[in-house]
Image (cartoon, rainbow, N blue to C red):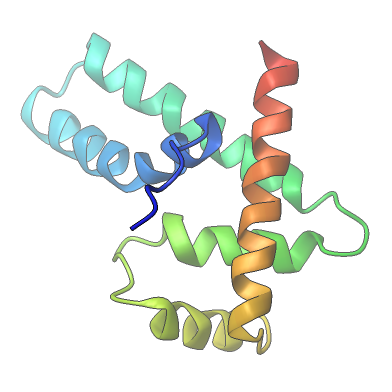
Length: 120
């Protein structure tokens, strides 16, 4: 069985989005004050939002890329599977074939990675 390639910076940021939201909420309710963890969570969430919003700037695919990333990684509740993601995208945007979803998700993550590399 072939090993999965390591996650890119953008994909790691997306995978950590929901946990960052949860950590931020927990720290806000417990401490009530600004601390380092809360500040780090806030910065991570803002960076992720900025990158995802930048996807919308793509003339041909902007909205489609946005909804693919949003539903896949940024909704409050994590989808159970790809079919649930595709159903949610169809409700919020329009139907996207499964094969197209995977192709455009990879493309969106590459675009986000490029933006991250230019920020560094």
